[in-house]
Image (cartoon, rainbow over all chains, first blue to last red; front, side):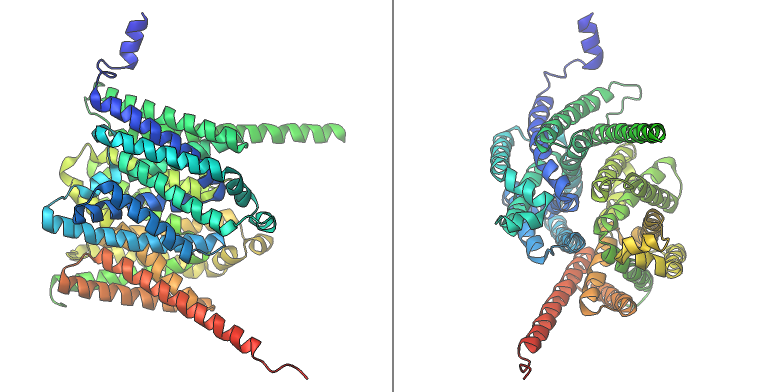
Amino acid sequence: MTGLVANVVFEPGFFANGPVQVALLAGGVVAVTSGVVGVFTVVRGQSFAGHAFSDMDTTGGSGAFLLGIGTLWGFLAVAVAAATAMELLGVERRRGRDVATGVVLGAALGLAALFLYWDTAVASTSGATTTVLFGSLFTIDGSTVPAILAFSVAVLAVAAVLYRPLLFTSVSADTARARGVPVRMVGAAFLVMMALAVALSAITVGAVLSTALLIGPAATALRLTKRPGTAMLAAASIGLLGVWSGILVAYDSSAWPGHHGWPVSFSVVAVIFVLYLAAELQSWARAGRAQAGHGRAATRSR
Amino acid sequence: MFSGFMINTWIVGSIAAVVAGVVGFFVVVRGSAFVAHALPQSAFTGAAAAYLIGINTLFGMGAFALASAFGIAWLGRRGRHDVVTALTLVMLLGLGEFFLSYSVEYAQAIYSLLFGEVLGVSTNEIVPTALIGAVAIVAVAVMYRPLMLSSVLSEIGEARGVRSFRMELAFLVIVALATTAAVPVVGALLMFSLMIGPPAASRCFTDNPFVAITLSVALALITVWVAIAVAYERNWPVGFLVGTIGAALYIIGRVWQAWGRSRVSHRITHQPAPA
């Protein structure tokens, strides 16, 4: 009986499949790192910068291809350069920061267009855009997994060291400054950390999925709890759940009626989006109940 | 450079520049750069869906741009706007990939929407572009005062009876219209760069909104014209030129602003001390 159920949920060959194993492992590592960094990102209101980094990795990827160096180095170089540019242009206010991010993103995407043009003119890689943007969990090169693991551990270590000052400056920059926390330094360090985390996930799962994993689980977790530590644990778990069930759906979908395999990025994004909507609805329902209860209490006291 | 098919490119590029210059000013004032990035990309999904069911891509793009404008406004009523924008964006791009996985033959044409190619615009694309662009500009003109008030001082706007949510929704719809007008001909990347670079630069030079909007339109037109000319001569992608010229204009604006500020503080510190 259990075997039958397992066969219905997991199409035959799911766990024995090489690409699926690599996808489960690499996707899981990326999901955990993105979940933790994502909580800081959402609390600090820097979703746009987080998404911009993943888009800008198109520039890094195409530039690296042009120079003939490893894609990972291209991603890292662009991530650090873009973080520096944003910090230099960045203004203290949120609106100014948005515009600075937008200008850097526009210039970087323009460069990507040029690099891709040169790439195609020289070496004919018309699919480069698609690969960088959408990526695919099922085409990860198994040999990159150790590098992904190492970078994830580094990012998580930096996050642990910066945990308190980061939260402090996110909640109240002025108080933190008065207490002697180097607000600007902490912000710059976070930007670089986020750029690295996003580069890491963009190389693994593509730019679209990288943004989804950074923002979706963290936003969902912060709807459920306000404690940052708990939220990080929850975000990492939600990310893992999203990636693994997305991989499962993508793998199974080719056996469903129609025999059309769903793109794996789409499956994962869909799961994450549905989870976010569910958390949103639940928090609305709770707010509605609280309001109704409050109304009753007010009538009674009168 | 001005013959035959290039004429269409010049006309459509100029329309996109004017619309982006006007709408982009409010994008910059409201700090909505992320939305300006997300809505043009949602057009990609719209085009993919339209190809799949076999209708005119313009309808698909318009429908998806408007739907995401409503979705972002509604989900963003409480909570973080940037979070909702990010999630809507990735959901749409994922959906676009899903639609495209069913129709392989048009994939290249639809991907070109993301990066855009201005050269080779057909004549029957000009009229819809001009019409939708005109609607966006008229809408900005009609709502100029409440839009400005809710952008700059949202609390005072609320007190004067301007509903922030309605204004936000109206603004997002305007950006969606501008997007639908421009993306089919210039691409998502180019439209985004045009809505950020020139308006952000113009804000560095003046505080007067009318002057800033005029300057922003002028800078956007110059950017597009230079980009088309260079693209024609050197065969470089237009998106690259628009993106880098926009960024260069903004950096010039920031330097000018910093220089002006240091001049003012210099004058203040060197005033003769009162006797």
